[in-house]
Length: 295
Image 1 (tube, rainbow, N blue to C red):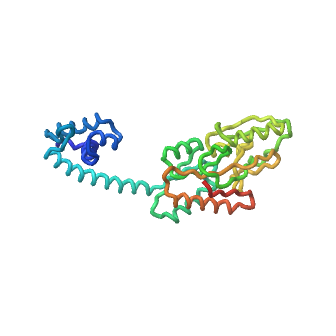
Image 2: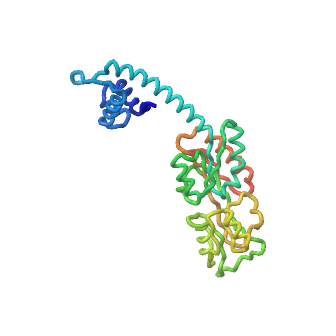
Image 3: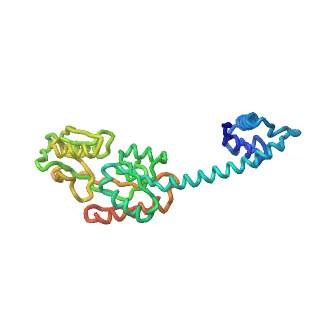
């Protein structure tokens, strides 16, 4: 079987014709002029024909070059049309990312809203920590991410917030001021953990991190086992097997952010935002809600 024609080389050939020379073709394709020349020479060796020859201070296509130019245009048109169709099919898969602590609270409503509005899209979920979600959004590998953050540097727009509360097994008794609080927490970095340490320290408690985990399941499991009290955002109900502890310093709220990749369809973003607003309306009696539609 004969060697296939190289698409990049054919694209350089077409650019020379369309742009009026090697230099302009190189600028248009963001390549060096020497690379454009190498592409032409490679095509000439492959076909054993002279495709472009000098004419005065410029160049011109030979008859063989003109014939290849016509074929190159047809090949590239078919290739580019096929690629556009395939990319459209890929874009129909919507990738939604969320931190674990936000997933249980808001993803069901978000998923329902997006499926109702865009039934032609399949949905893939990615559950990870905020740092990984932030990197994935920046790279474009995730379309929409729901993040919890205690810092104004959290990416995306803040669409609301949830109260942070203390949870432990039913046998837990809050220590007195000056005594040690046993804490079950996420591994660093974690804004909720830092908030808990700061508030307990300011209130005069000693703190011992008796259990830490990289997962929500691990933190809840440690609290259920009586290893310590956990700090979690609350949408109105306690995690199974835990009760809310009210005898410790208040923790305030944690922001919920909607981040989208660059270039996401604005209608998709609006649908996600409306779903999150609907989620917060359900809990307007449990927390003061901040909705911000401004970028």
